[in-house]
Amino acid sequence: MEQDIGHCFCFLLIHVKDCCGNDTKQCLRMNSFGHLLFFVTDRKKFHTAPVGQAFRLRPFHVLVATGGGYAGYRKYEDYKLEQLEKKGIELPVKLASEWEVALYKSVPTRLLSRAWGRLNQVELPTWLRKPVYSLYIWTFGVNMKEAAVEDLHHYRNLSEFFRRKLKPQARPVCCLHSVISPSDGKILNFGQVKNCEVEQVKGVTYSLESFLGPRISTEDLHFREASPGNSFQQQLVTKEGNELYHCVIYLAPGDYHCFHSPTDWKVSHRRHFPGSLMSVNPGVARWIKELFCHNERVVLTGDWKHGFFSLTAVGATNVGSIRIYFDQDLHTNSPFYSKGSYNDFSFVSNNNKEGIPMRKGEHLGEFNLGSTIVLIFEAPKDFKFHLKAGQKIRFGEALGSL
Image 1 (cartoon, rainbow, N blue to C red):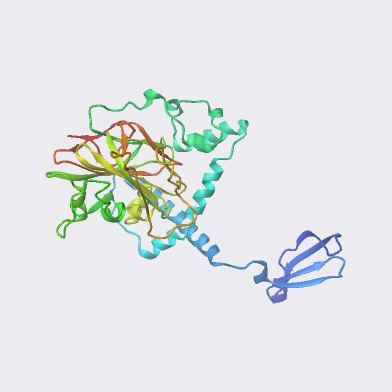
Image 2 (cartoon, one colour; image 1 turned 30 degrees about the vertical axis):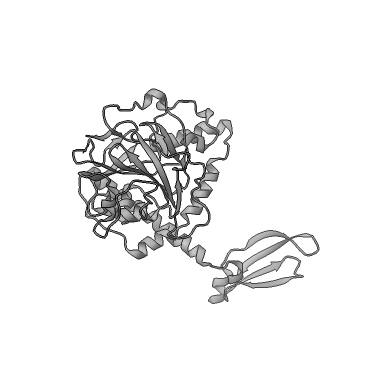
């Protein structure tokens, strides 16, 4: 019986060169003892090799298979949750366990994102550009009428298409409100920061200090002096009577991928956190606590007329590339990094005491595909957001004002 099973394996004909350089046919099959048998048609050679030598299972293969499969399963679960949300059904918060987060992290998202970035830079033949870009436009609902160049043949590669510029009149900047949206996207959450915790989506929080990192020296920013009674949140608030506010904006793949200055402010410091590149779509943000603290991000901090102000660009799957236009020393998604590390850079120097001045609406940076922007800033208690959670917003529209 066992021999019959072994003989039932199909024969694979392959052409190989023998040691004399002659092109001969070999026959491959598996016997009942689990060995691969190679039979040379001229019967002059016989070779037996264990199956384990033909394919050796390595830990990397297991991680990719299990992690990738689990990520696909989570995508399907996210889709079902989105459908329930559209029906107005409020869902209970169900957070991922430590092993689930570890399994998700096992997916080589950084490597995949670098490969995706290189693929995006490959120049497409002119005849192929319109079909490829049209498929993307149809899939993600891109409005090309807003693009400065509507002709799809103009974009040499996917990277240029992702970073397309808009017509000047496509995004008018609101002049009546002090803070505008820095990008297109969806409002995930907003409001006051309480107890040093910030909500990434409703009911799921992350630590303010873990997200921004340790307090920057007072030489760069005019923070309140630290004391045993002051929390990290209190140290960020520089003026009496002010509160700390936050706003989270999710950029979908079909959104405009550049981001702009949300107000008039001065950027004094940049902190780059290398990290994971997990998906940041609302379904995953609802599932993984402190998701934004796990992922790679670039934190820009400074001050505006009311005190402390920060803008953080959070990376995601296929979004390892985060570019800040005035920061040529920034390089994200490097192949090697130390877990838990971060890199600081000060824009304040002896020749520049003010840092980098940014005007409201001015170009600030860009993502490779789409991700998340987090604003954390200080403002008087009468600051009001003009938003609703879950609403779509476009760059230039009002976020809030006094």
